[in-house]
Length: 408
Image (cartoon, rainbow, N blue to C red; front, side, top):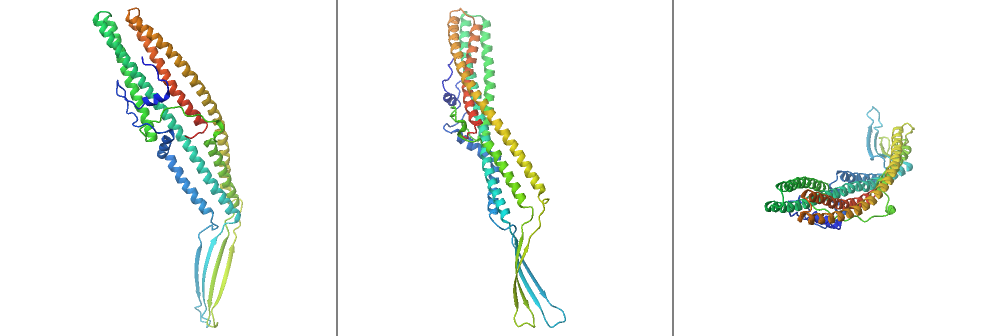
């Protein structure tokens, strides 16, 4: 039986090579893309990304609006009065006015602060969502790798069983083995063909899920990701929760500053014409309206902001606790994967030697076919375990980086 591969890079190469025994699922057509490129491609296809990008345009527009002192659009007023009585004054008055509501300094400052917090919140939520997309991509990649490894090992096992079946058939015809041995070898080969069919279906499904997620037809080279230090960067999920809390506090400050509507200033120009006057009389008027605010005006908004603050604070604490637990679990998983790979490699080496001795004994008639088939099956299982543990080690690297909040 073929020995197991020595590196995950070779496993990655096996994902794009056609099988010589039974047709493999549609394999990647090109090699050379990176994990970052796969994540970028998945990001372009993620609905949440489009929503956040639209939200980003929204908060930028709100920031530009917060820079203005105008609380409402200016209003132009026109009025005219004519004396239509039976007097000799023949009086006429014409007036034009411009009015608008203006933010108080405290209100404008609170609006600017809220706009800045909203921009920060969207930015960090983009990072957190991108990290979530990266988690899906990482899982899809190693899921496809594991399925392809299982398929390759099933095909390899079938290849060797077919060789053994042909050898047994020749010896049955030569009278060295019984007809029952030939039937046993035949049914083992048929069972292996069924296993290959099932493994091929699983590999096609896994690769299809990767393609749906990323839109790519090729997998990155399946080498373990470089590991990063825990303090390399702040976890985007925690930063996003903290940003949501800061924005909620900014909403609360704006509600407190806006307990009354903004004041309204009006500027007017009046012209008075009268028969008894030699020249028209022009005058300028300035009016100021200051609304009287009450605490009840924004009580609902303030209560909602308090709810958001409490929720965001609780979510931040929960995310921090989960992040710490995820890091510890990922580190333990990585250590276990390394240990399991070493153990699986030692076991496979011992079983290969064991099978080689059984094959020699079978050729000289010292061992039966059933014993040889059992030994080969165990050796095949050991090879599969080694290949799967290499994939598990690569996945453990990815999961630790994911727990640390490391973006590709």
